[in-house]
Image (cartoon, rainbow, N blue to C red; front, top):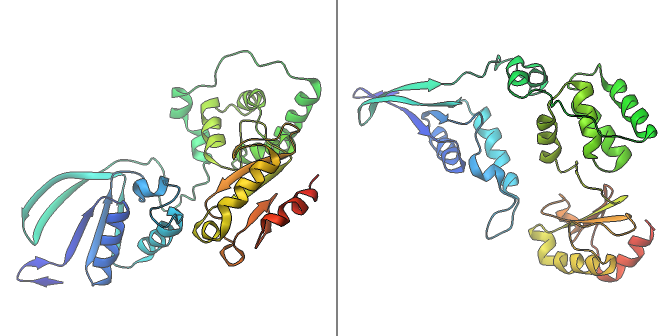
Length: 289
């Protein structure tokens, strides 16, 4: 689209929530939009937030649909991992030189499986497996960890299945076992810890046999979610994020369980309990005694 030599294309610099929304608005108006982001992916700081003010809504619940819309919009072209190198021209007719950093993978074939990271010779050279003595473990633990590793050794992206298996058996990821995994799979311990601390499903500290999550999303909160959390904390004699002394329960406060239609809701070991009342809490806990 050109009018008097001016080109109907727009360059949006920055792929945060502001840049994303501006790109969508411009693209919906018929402009060709180039969304430039220096990071490997768009989303910015909002993707790292837990909730938003003043509604306490989950930030990713707001951001995720916009990310999908940007990726699918025919008028938007994403340019990530790049920065502006040169800019010249005048209003309506700029010429921009973009410097794009290499990814070292074929972006069209990448599925995000992470196998290339495990086998990258550069990363292995920069972050070698630590040459430290392995911790002493009981014989049953040594046999168990060897069996787990052998079961998943031939799988693609084997690290994640190994960590999931250990987490199921131990209810957390014992640091000493992770050092054995590092040696056996020849993966730097720092890489393993990055994954173990990123996913909420993993924990580096012992957890109870049953995990209780109390939803504190907007709908649950206004319907008494805070009082339910306080009641559970009082009943179990622990604060959110702590584990009972008998290692039976661990209590969590989460921002969204996706159960707004049955608010207020809690979840125990993946099972949702909706329309919870304070008087019902003792009977629910008795099912897990």
